[in-house]
Amino acid sequence: MEAIFEASFHAGDLNRPLETMFVPPPYDTSFDSYGIPRITASLPVIAWLVENKENVPEAESCVLGPVQTEETLKDSVALSSLIKGAITSEICSSGIYYVNGFTFRADVSQVSLIFTKR
Image 1: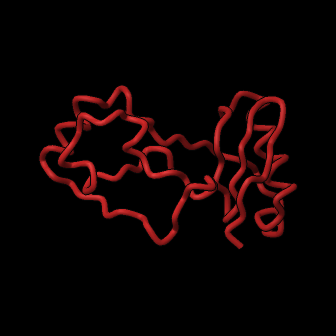
Image 2: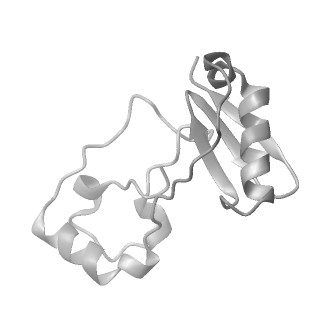
């Protein structure tokens, strides 16, 4: 989520600071679900991405589980426990987790539910 940026809006001024080029994630208080910009693949934007690729965050994923029942996928507490176990065992890293409509902020010390799409 952190790597989506307003390409069509910023295509005319790619010298702006990198942090102003990203759309805030849906769990951020400044996120506007009615104001999501179009993403375009214009040549200046593609060139900018290639030149700045080391500064653009990449999406990561990891496998949680095994999940014992379908109900586990609907239970934020159970999902939180799976995330905590994966981070503790170093299978997954700290960060933001989006799992089945739930968004968690997780690190070695805690896993917090920060947004629910339900």
